[in-house]
Image (cartoon, rainbow, N blue to C red; front, side, top):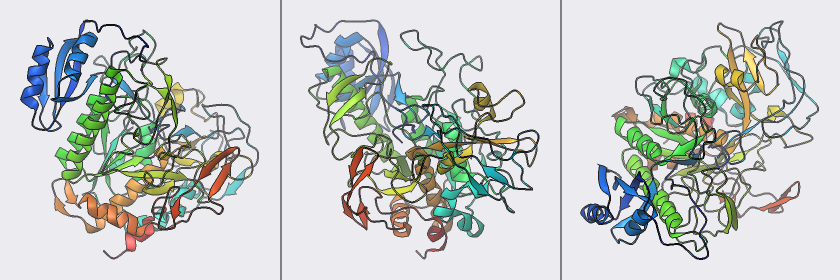
Length: 574
């Protein structure tokens, strides 16, 4: 989840700057909006603090315990931070980075490789009648690497691209979706960059009426650099069935692409997919939309949400890090407090919370250095020491089920974060470098928006893929497109799909259709997971990177309580 991530939200500060050796006196600046989180029962005192600091109230959110206030500059923030009624302050602006194709994203990296495209018909579309040879790779967005070798698979009755879905076979979803495809009474919320609701392999399960977009595109950042780019619509607020980044569509497809003889099938192909967008086109996440997304999911009766991202601008949120200025500390406290309140609100309303763990190859129980924060605006990063008191949000927030990634062999993916306290479950996330050489087919294949592929130059003018990391299926009209991606952002939706199967089986009539308490879903996810022990020896070397697994077979830092199992979820007795 960490590296897009999936990537993921947050409270930002106006121009997060590293602490100076000799701090200058805080200055008043132009008025801007701040999210001011108050201590329990201290709403009135916090409002008084805002007034004393020269600010004015804009709005109040009593569900999550914060107010939106307008005030001027650092002097306003410092005055609020000194008041005991205030537990966190941050500007209401972009600071989060969602899962995507950059090293910072929470869960996805493009499948890297080069090689021939799949066996195709004259138009370049996958042949669904004669089968196809899978190319070993494509040239990805991160760096060019040549991957030799190719493996042959033959298509069969059912979903045309099912032979490419090693991930579904690993967790038994190919069998489970015939027995328990999931109920239309189960609502799965995808908090991400959006969902391409018109994609042929998503549209049948897409709930447009309940979907919401909580963000507004922003062409440029505060420094005048391109952020989201030109707005696609006059209002700069994209329709609810649009995803201009592609990450959210991939996640949604893994969860619930239908059984319709097109492309692939998701883990739970019979459930409803609800777009609850909180990420920008650029992949950044604002705090307010993130809080709004979780609150909305809770209020409409969503059963489970997938969060393949982390909250920026801080990869690790530290409440009292001496390397940070007072303003930066207040930001991080606001992120920790605000997100935890939103997560608690959703969980109490019956929403199971699932998150990607992160793509930093880091033992989250022993972090040492953070060189990527604050990540917004770009160029604000600094190097600071961190420890286990600093947390990745929401992966390390309370009540969240966090998912590590494994490759095709079941080995923990080289990029996946880990930790005995942090890893709850594991699931297929892909790993192009696992085994001899590297192959894009070791990544996760799921739906991709055609418009995004065209804009990023991955298709030629006729619509034919230029890289074997992209697959086109023209077995029906219009053609549909799919992309190979790696990441814990790809692992988390497998767990979300399994959770949807469990809710379909054991849920009782509830607000959104069916309901099953998050505690019960969590218990059943753990009960049905396939236990996997640490490697022997416990320290495994990924090329030159040594990572040590702690714990026993029933719970350890690499695999949590095991790899999710859709077939067991479809057959287990409660």
